[in-house]
Image (tube, rainbow, N blue to C red; front, side, top):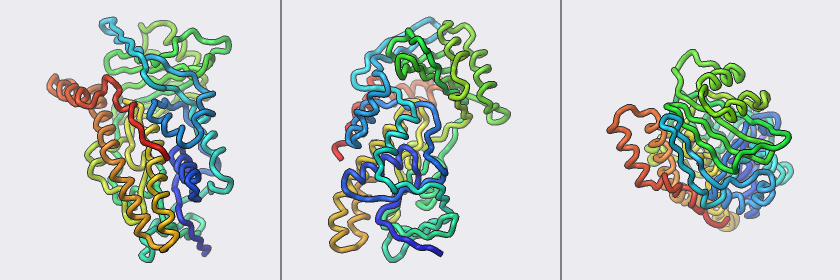
Length: 393
C-alpha cells in the first residue's frame, strides 16, 4: 500500500477547489487537488458573477483575463407578464455572465503544474490522531496523510460527511439552461432580463455580442419528471406560449449540445449554515460543500470564491508558525478563524435565498408578508449582498 504525506489537500477540482489552490499558491503555500473525474470538469453552462465575486477573482489574479470573455451587464429588467408590469434597475457595480468552461479552464491554467490529480476516488477519511489532520484512502489503495484537508467537493461532499454535516435538502424544481448563438449578432440590451409568469421564471443574460445564456424554471412534482433536454425544452416552450417572439425563438434556436436540465435544487437551509460543524481539527469545507444555495439570488459561486480568499488568507497566517514548531495548533486556529469570519456572511446569504424560494411558492398572504419583511431587512431589493468585499488575499 502506497503512502504519502502533504501539507494541504483539497478534495474537488471544480471552481472552488481550483480557486482555493490558486489562492494558496499566491500565498506561497503548495497544495494537492484530488479530483474524481478523469479530466477537467469543464461542462455546465454559465455562471453569473456579481461585484463581490469579481473582487475575489481580482485577488486570485484571473479577473482581467475573464473580463475579456464576457460583456458587462448594465441593468436588471424584470417583467411580469400578468399585469404587463416591468421595472428596470441599473447595475451599480460589476455583473457579467461567464461560460463555466471559460472560468474552469482559466482557473486550471493558473494552477501550478502537477497540483491536480485526476481519477482520484476517495473511499475513506479518518482522523489522524497524531496530527489532528486527516488520513485519506483512495480507490487504488493509496493512503494520503494531510495536515490540512479542505472539502470543495460539492453538495454530495465526502468531507462534509466526515465533519458530520447533514445532507443538503432538496427543492423539486425543473431548471432548463442553455446557450443560443447569434452568428450575426443579437439585438438584446446588455441587461439581465427576468421574466415572471405565475410560478414560471425565465432569465436571459447576454454573454457576448453573439452568445446569450438563458434559463427557465418552474416547480415540478416529486416523481415522473423528464430529464431529457429536448423534451424539457418543448415543455418550456409550451409553458411560454404568449411570451414575446424573441423569447420563444431564443429557446427554439438554442444549441442542443448546451442544454442542461436538473429537476432538484440542492440547498443548505440557513439554520444548518448558522449551526453546522464546519471544522474538525484541521479539516474544513468551502463552496457548495459548506453552503449549497438555491440559485435565486445568484450567489452560490461568488460566495465560494470568497471562501477561497478568506481561507487562504487565514492559512497563510499560520504557515510560518507551523513551519517553526511543526504542530497542528496554528492550522486549527487558522481554520477556526476562517469559519468564524464566513459564518455570518453565509448565514445571511442562505437566509435571503431561502426567503426568496419560499416566497416564489407561497400561497398564504401571511407567509408572503413574512418573506417580504425578511428580504426588506436584508436589503434584497438593493442587492446589498453584491456589495460585500472579502478583503485582500
